[in-house]
Image (cartoon, rainbow, N blue to C red; front, top):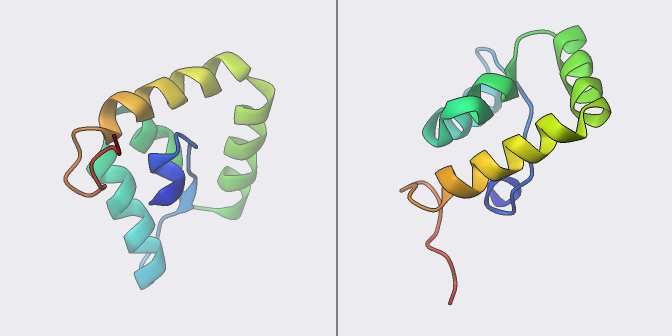
Length: 82
């Protein structure tokens, strides 16, 4: 949750385990392109998604911007500090 609040795109390996469901739920709460880009279902997809983000700084910047816009009104994350 802290990574999302800090504007860091998060990848999570979706699945049936509690920690996998938790990561998927957090990304779903944020929604939009962040959720679509962040949930993968195999280790190969995880690796491919991580490498793709590193190699595409424009997409990474867009995801960070989407995080900033989506995290502020989220009930799952604390309100911004003044």
